[in-house]
Image 1 (spheres, rainbow, N blue to C red):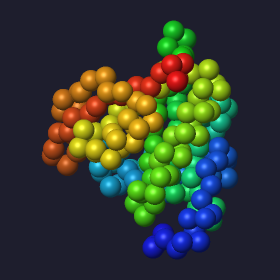
Image 2: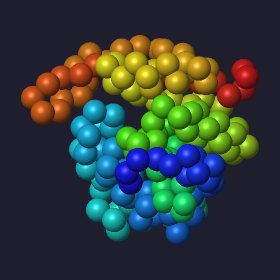
Image 3: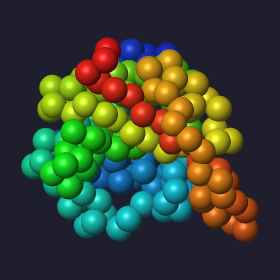
Length: 175
């Protein structure tokens, strides 16, 4: 997508993901992953694996929302419930927005929608990991209410460089 037209901003929707969004989600995920800065994956999984992931998220009723503009996926936020029964109150948050749509409040809208769904699903603790050299994301997470819980030194290795990550969490039952 090129430059953003003002009328496109009026057409932004945040909705629960459906099978119709899978290919667009895959493209957005791949775009953000290939930047090699925001996600720990360096490219999206192949489309069949991405399809399985999305269909599994829908089947298990894990929160997964997308931001669309003119039916194109430009961002997402998903929360995957932990699979151990003793940890099933916990979910791990992942999100991304393609470059032309950053800095417009979409991340906040995506998180707000996903966290609402998480609370409805009975999740109590939402966790995430973010690179320490991403202050914009850390600021967004803090704005939503996430607290820093620790730093994992040299936990990511991309293109010959190590990066620290910050663990953050939000307790939905204390909001």
